[in-house]
Length: 227
Ligand SMILES: Nc1ncnc2c1ncn2[C@@H]1O[C@H](COP(=O)(O)OP(=O)(O)OP(=O)(O)O)[C@@H](O)[C@H]1O
Ligand SMILES: [Mg+2]
Image (cartoon, rainbow, N blue to C red; front, side, top):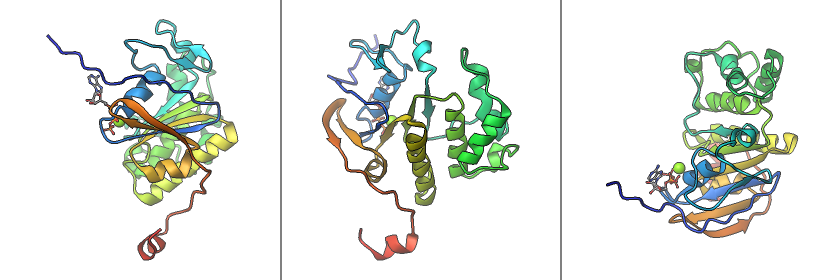
């Protein structure tokens, strides 16, 4: 018999429209599980989740979930499709979503700083470029919420900065709510206005952060100064 273990306890969390909300905590604390509950990937054993003010019903969840996108640590791009076909893919797979055209995909590629990359082979891109393709793909369905699970953990500081700056620009420009899981406090501090600290499957604290300015990475500065 498989022993059922409880992963999360007493999670009571409210995220406002246009927040960049962080979930921070050590490995195994339950961050990804909370995110996967919020985006409808998994169903809670008890309790309920509301998305955009409506209860997430697991039989009809698609009606709500189609207004969300997901960004992963390992990008989750299809290597057998070129850049633009990866960007357009969600519009082909998702029902009830406007079939976006190549023009919109090109605009998004320009927005993420990848003009002229549309026919590139995914394997030829750097990690940062791959994540920017994934971000363009996440935007093609005009999501109201973007869920990000460790979006910069596979990237070096410079590439992390580019990706975080892009997420901030998306939040500013499209008023997209962003929920960001990270174990990296500097990532959370750079981006989030509120953050829940997850410990052992529970919320230890929810903290409001002051707005931080994202500063481009300079290796020389970082090496020569403590802060
Ligand atoms: N499907 C599952 N079945 C059983 N246990 C699970 C399942 N998914 C996650 N867990 C357990 O739940 C706990 C929380 O996992 P979760 O992946 O949410 O942690 P995390 O905070 O995202 O960690 P990391 O920083 O390593 O990604 C872990 O102990 C994990 O082993
Ligand atoms: Mg995780």
